Length: 419
Image (tube, rainbow, N blue to C red; front, side, top):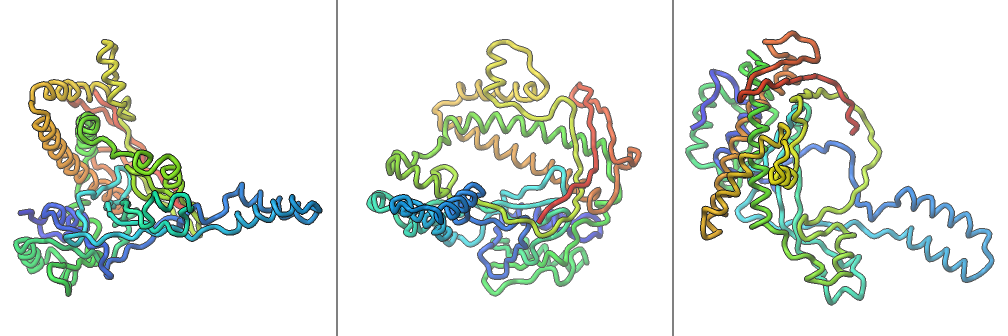
């Protein structure tokens, strides 16, 4: 059972971690769920003229006045009508999930900003009747089944963007725990209520702090950098496992070309529907209407800017070529996976081993990122700095980790965000 830190209020981060631990779900279909829009408004690119099309339309219109040949006039008029008559945007209609709500397993923080978001995968359909050409009506379902990924930002740059978070699936012991810590004063009185629908708890995120006193008492650069290194090692391991798992067991589903033919596959792709990535139409962003300044904590490890591809590392290993730092982090897992794939028979047992190891690694990554997130929030939102370093905006520290002298740098900078 998780316990609150000292006599301190739950933060929004604490609550999200609490919901995830109990494997509860967020009901984004609830009318009470409101997610403030951030960033530019996006529109379906198929419904707007591109810059090139705008130039073409002006040229056609200007030329039309000087034409006398009827055939040329008709050709210009047809093209103008084609440009002017853009179709209505396609709409994705989601299926009702069973059970209600979506898992917060996809909860992610930002390594450099005071951001937290979650992603859901929704199945549903897209009505193609307004765009489906006659020659494809007998080949492609008019109500086309697909899926869509949606991202929801809970906190952006330290500001909460969701007022009410409807949560379903919390067990009775979790509710009893919330009531008990509320009585002790760790959770504000009006921070949660039970919803009208059975099994729903409504959390008012505006009643919870983004950081608490415990978050701002002590911020250690050495601890923070060590956690960043730990996360990188875990990410190297899980990257190798996912690569092997994808190649063996998670191949992309049969393409639309094989199911519906080349012409249909091309039509679907142009309208943003792809077999392995779902419905994701090309969008155009509208012009920003405001600008604000945001803080970013940029952290780097010298020589470890990015992890290479697994194939690249494997090839260098086979050719006995020297490996750089990031590749060396991946080498043991590549060797382990190769050995385990030969050890476990039948292959279904190896599949189970991969899934179990990836689950453990993913949980470890989340725990490590959770520790880092608290310190990122304390620096950006609490306006603090590492207490074991001088307070300039940029610092550097060398730490001996895993027998290697690693050089870390941290820089707090300001960026402009257009919305």
